[in-house]
Amino acid sequence: MVRRLLRMAAVAALLITSASASGQELAQVPIIDAPQGTPGLGAGIRISGQPYSSKSTKTDLVPLYLYQGKYLFAEGTKFGAHLLPKQKTVSLDLLIRYNFSQLKPEDDAYFAGIEERKQTVQGGISGSVQGGWGKLKLEYVTDLLDRHNGQEANLSYRYKYQFGNWALSPFITGIWLDDKITDYYYGVSAAEALPDRPAYKPGAAFNFGWGVNSSYHLSDNIFLFGNIGSIGYDSTITRSPLTEENTTYTAFLGAGYLFGDNLSHPRVGYPSENNLSWRVSYGYQAANNIFPRVMAGEIEKSNVADTNLAGFTVGRLFQEGQRVQFWGKLAAYRHLEEPLQKDFWSFNFYMMAIGKGYVPWSEQLAFRYGFGLGFSYAQQVPIAEQFKQESKGENTNRFLNYLEFMVDFPVDRFIKSKWTKNCFLGMTIAHRSGIFATSDILGSVAGGADWVNLSYECVR
Image 1 (cartoon, rainbow, N blue to C red):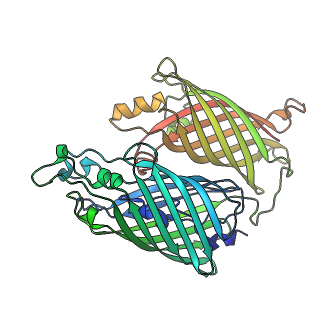
Image 2: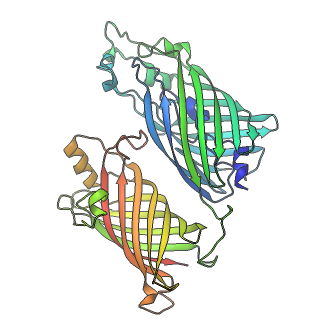
Image 3: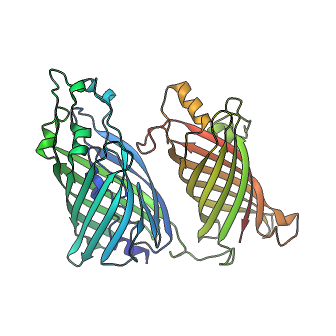
């Protein structure tokens, strides 16, 4: 069933070029045709040329958060909802996607005096039709963060060749950008103008791109992908004093893992009805970083950011083996940070591998241990992260990577009751970080924060 993943293309898991949304087609990963309810995790390296005056090549680590549901989907940095029942020929989706387009004045002395052109989030609608002749797709999106308030449309065609576990998918794409987008990223205002950098106001542009996407399934769960492509820019962009390149080339390489008991893995251990969980937790801001000090047992409370964390987590069992279970989890944390700042919420989606330890020479469960990986979005930046980053003179971000470590013990070994059956008391360590400033989508943050929590979880 999972090998059918290669029969359809993921639509723009993330953006590859830093100049426009032209990397949408270049960035697909094998997830869109997964059976309903399939989650996955992965990572990719994007290597992209710059259209601006800087000659440097941008290299960026991109975490991939993947999910294909009946109504909702996540494809890297693109999230949305299916408006039509999932079918092979026609699709219609609402979508929100991250746009990596940016210009940082510090990248080149030539840009001194130029205002930073920031990345943004776009939202809109996507429709496609496909058959034996290939796939035709149209997307229309607008700026959601009031960075440029521009509109963009992408029309693409691709055809896929299947060779066993291999798939090759060449494509062509046309990208229309209105004058608000081109003016924001390529215009030069009167205040920014210099003798060698005259004022410039571009009009709407139409860029043309092409490329080839490839993927290979090492197994039903593990896939590799390697994509390469190019974008040619409209003359209204290439005439800008900020650009030098008429064409840029981009590559995207990575791997991922798809979870789910729809794969060729037998279910053992818990009976099939015990595949949901809930957890409550409460904890405090840790003084030290998770690696290596918290993991070494140094779990002192922070003296700088004396705050607390209350949470509720729900989970679903996606895959179970004899040694490890894989759970998908969604956690809502209330950050109790007054009077340092107002209390707020953060939301965390992650996959967690949970192992089991047994009493020697028996089948009695003694404890569980786990490791989780996903993403975290906070309504505002936790105060501990603000303090840490400010002390280093570095930036913060509300959207970061999320790690969780857990160890707990079965309560019904000590208290026999229907209320304690399949319930566990233990400790969890929650961690937000930017993966050592290697990822644009995580705000190029180098650092994070940690919380130590007492938790009570039940599996039903």
